Length: 136
Image 1 (cartoon, rainbow, N blue to C red):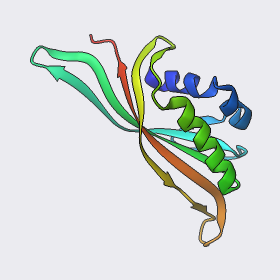
Image 2 (tube, rainbow, N blue to C red; image 1 turned 60 degrees about the horizontal axis):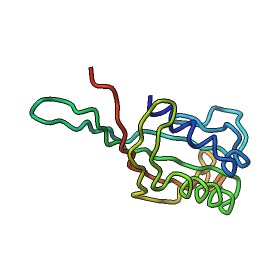
Image 3 (tube, helix red, strand yellow; image 1 turned 90 degrees about the vertical axis):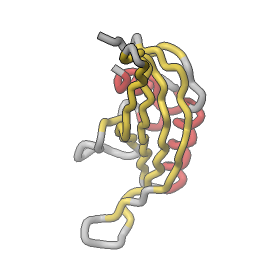
Image 4 (cartoon, rainbow, N blue to C red; image 1 turned 60 degrees about the vertical axis):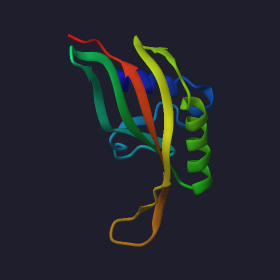
């Protein structure tokens, strides 16, 4: 599964692990988790087909958002992830990743509910991940 491969790829990097440990979550940060932490979310997943059917090549976009208590820490974490993932190709947890490309980057501030007070800073990176999957 590509999500497990991305989890392993990100958390196995010593620089990233020093910043977040294993605080990498799908969709949202569970309540009570300390910062910094990272969330990943699949935005789109396109399967490549020919006239003969699926070829097992997938073009997915994942947004990885780094949250921290300061902008500089969110930026430091996003830079570590960017440097580690951009241009990556290889096999992780049995998933063949052809390449990972960065296509977008944006700041994501988070406000306390009902206020204009920042309670955490975020930096989102959107990557295109080309990988192979089993065709049945």
